[in-house]
Length: 235
Image 1: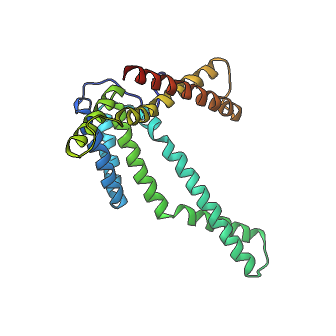
Image 2 (image 1 turned 90 degrees about the vertical axis):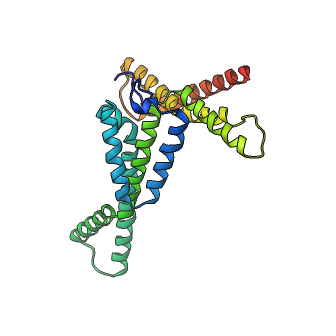
Image 3 (image 1 turned 120 degrees about the vertical axis):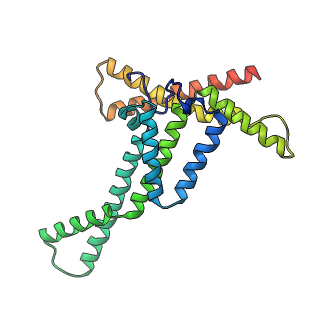
């Protein structure tokens, strides 16, 4: 588990691992998009099914949470923004009513701003749908290696070029596969530099994030450059 990072491949011999890569690249996003357009309780059903699949594939709770924790941070941001907006609106309405302001008025505004923010059905519905999309993405990356993803993208592009009156030479496979496979690479780099920070007795603080984000950008650009040169040398 110390070597696990978000959206990393986990070796296995399950049914999902054996599915042809191009099928996963077509089916998983298609199912996610379909459920995203349906009412949110369909997304709840998808989340339940995908969670069962993850447990059946022996993905621990920690591994699952590691991939979808960004949704929780996004949810905190949305609800905080909604709370600030509702509270500001109530405060403005109170001032325009020419009533005397007191401590109880402040409690009333704060309480109603909180209730209005956390009873926002639209935010909850959107977060549920995004959660389902992130789970689908997690399943795709956990059961597919970088080479399998590239192979799947190449198969799809080859098929499209056969049925359309365009050049038969694949032009987008390298760019798209690099973009997709760079997602887990970024998390791997972040995991490595954060471990190095802790090994040097560094503490988790704003200074850590300020320092490591600079390193993440530098190392990420370097790896992207090396990957691009390697692909160009082989073409």
